[in-house]
Figure 1 (cartoon, rainbow, N blue to C red):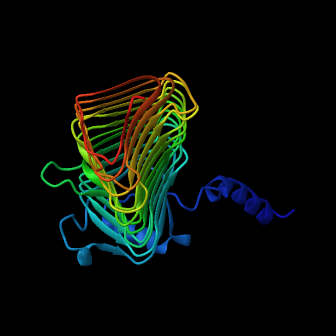
Figure 2 (cartoon, helix red, strand yellow):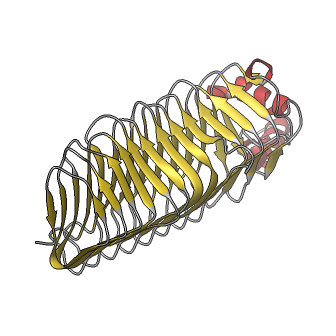
Figure 3 (tube, rainbow, N blue to C red):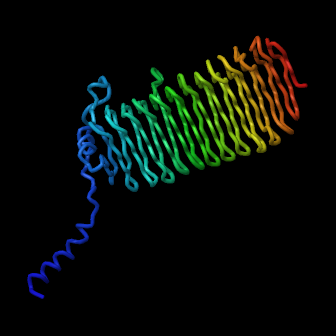
Length: 375
């Protein structure tokens, strides 16, 4: 073997570790223009973020949509281990789908930013991932806005007291899915899906809370689902409006729905509002204080149907209309149904308050075609 060949081989082996480095090693970026260039020029419009990144320069929030930093493509942003990514006070519009994904416990933040795309997918499936939305608009202009979490994940959403704003929005459906021990805290804002809002919590010990928050779909439906055990929905001041219907079901054991301080559930077409906690499981609990229902269709509130030891407590509430099939409030075997100090006025449809255990209906104003109260 010649000396030149030997030198060439030594050089090749020396360079091998360098040549093996990923082609996507990140160039530092902090501006909307740099992110635009990376998205438009990367193979497959796929950008991998290997270091924490704060997009805070360039086109700043407050300009009309036509003046947003426009990305003439879609973009997939992949977050590497421990990399945080933040849209910080900027305005960007992606003319294709925007997808942000991670498989580790990353943090994604939208802070006082408007980020629009044809569709939006935030795929944060790593254990312990977190999404923060602060006075921002994340909007799918021609499709779904989809947010997916894994286990031990966190969602914090805060709007502005002066103008709530549509924090997650879609021209089609807003979809949110999460696994075990997910926690969500929502305050002062909207989730707004034209054709629907679908909240689907699939794991045990999930907590979803809002105050001064609204979840709207027109002409679509709003659906809340929790299929694990020991999960909590806690709703304070705000509204849930599904023009074509509202459904809230919790099918695991020891689940709780708690509402207080004027929460409105409204629907204007379709089957109305159905709330069911416990299904065939034990200790399903519904506690509603100052809850208001209105619109078309009917109203069903039930706990532990087919289960045991459930509770429905409806206090200082009101039902206006809902005269499609009327109003039914009930609990299953060994359960308790308590309806007090409330106004139930479907007028031309029946009101039924019942339990397969203990039942109390007192100090209520009821105007209905028929009444069946604690038979």
